[in-house]
Amino acid sequence: MSTGTTRDRILDALEGILIDEGVSTVTLESVAAAAGVSKGGLLYHFPSKAELMAGLIRRLADRAEEEFREAGSSGEGVVRTFLRTSQPASKHEAELYWSIIAALRSKEVMTDETRDLVRYFFEEWSRLLHEELDDPVLAETIRLVGDGLYLSSIAGLAQPDPGTLRQVMDRLIDQADRAKRTPPDGG
Image (cartoon, rainbow, N blue to C red; front, side, top):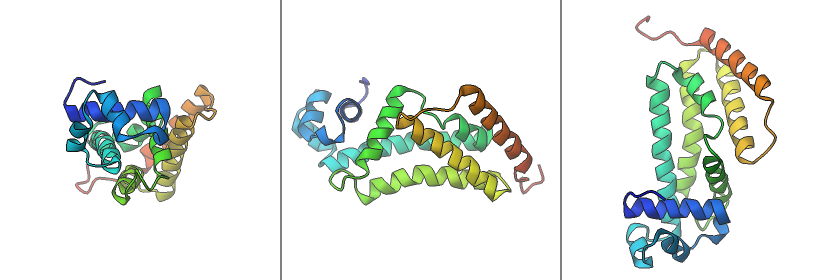
């Protein structure tokens, strides 16, 4: 659990419960207890279970925005950043996102706003890929490969042989390098 703000402690506690026990066990009381705050303290920050989940999704959206900025500003580029981040960085991340996917089915804990934020994660990568590449079919192929890798990884499905996966990534990157849009300034 982070040593940050009370709000962060509450969101960290929610993450822990989602990962360890699943979305069906999330209650305001269980999150408050795990965060070491009173229920009133939790309600001050998050007046409902839906707002609590929205807070977690917003925090994940902030992290995603950092990746989007990095993809656009680093020398690595969008394609390489997207493919590099197409597998969870940790077991914790995989389990958290799997819990979020499960929570998307709940009308009680997920609002249209939070569903839209999760959809935005996927749509923004697609937009960035299409913006970087002149070839829309290649942009979609890369998006589908990345999304498939991520979703199969968080679902615990069998992963491709590492050598084969490296060859897939190298081939897509090579094709993407040849299909990059020329910047408007000609550079």
